[in-house]
Amino acid sequence: MKLSSLLAGALLVAILTMATHSQTPPAPAARIAVIDMQAAIAGTREGRQALLDLQTKFEPLRAALEKKEADLQVLQDQLQKGAATMNDESKLRLERHLEAGNRAAKHESEDLSAEAAGDQAVAAHELKMKMAMEVEKFATQNGYAAVLDLSSQENQVVWAPPAANITAQMIKRYDQSHPAVAR
Image 1: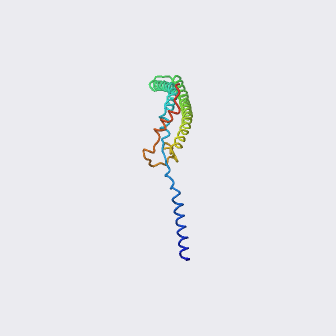
Image 2: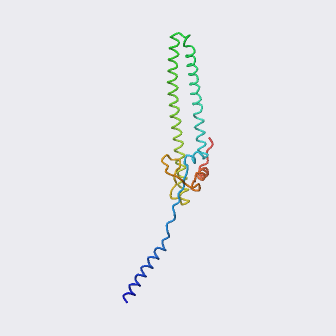
């Protein structure tokens, strides 16, 4: 009798254990996607427009700086060619003019580079924040546990299947959500 009670109890425990295991399905595998955030931002209409706006703003300034540098090169050539025939006062005046012009051109070039980098950073930050919101919505709606940025400097992704790359989908989704405004 004791043996049958013990066996019945053990059988009951085994059945209950199996029942609880069968009631909790295994967790589904976490879905992970990858995106080249820089390519996604640059591929949007708004990203292309921002790049065009920056080029439109800075191209005339860059061209003017190149012209100044070319003019300084002409003066440098004059100094080298005429050094033997110029008097000391003319040579000194031309050298000082060249030094001042080169300093001014260097300063303008540094200022232009800094301003362009600043404007580009502001535009990129605004677009990245908008894209990040779109990525978050997309990932949430499609059951992704994580989206990894392939363009990040700290990128640790060694391999991902092409089907996991959502860059093209995000460009399309972004353009639908944020139509570019004609400027």
